[in-house]
Image 1 (cartoon, rainbow, N blue to C red):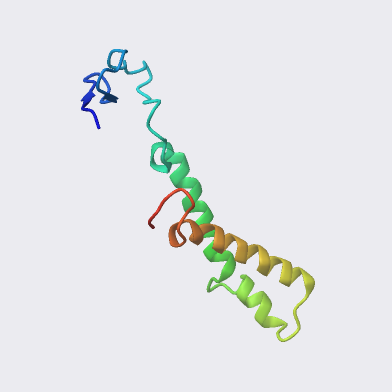
Image 2: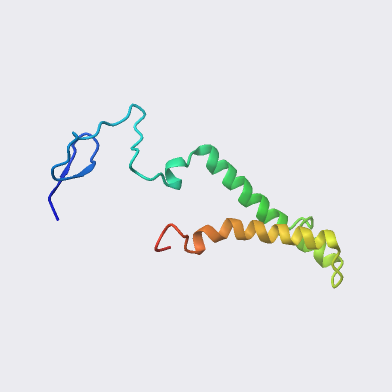
Amino acid sequence: MGQVTIGPACMDIQPAGWPGKACKMPAGGHQPWRRRTRMDEFDFAGFLWRLLFAVALVLLTFNPTGHSYYHWLADGFPSVQPTEAIAGILLLIGWLFSCAPRSLPSARSASC
């Protein structure tokens, strides 16, 4: 294959004989050819939402005060009411939602 040149303004890789000049960095600093990742969008508000979701999920599942899904289910065991089953399914979905992106390979990436 031919040689490539790297534009100094934005590190854009261009094939040899490229008719245009090196690209210019937009005013906002966004590189249009670079795919945005989750870390590009991670900010302090996102951190607080994730922390709040994680703490709520853990404390709703089990906490030492006796007001949790575990205690609610254990009080009436072995019979399970429909509201307890629905709450359990919602907690399971919450746990899968919070754990699955890091433990399962995504369709966009080849490795975990």
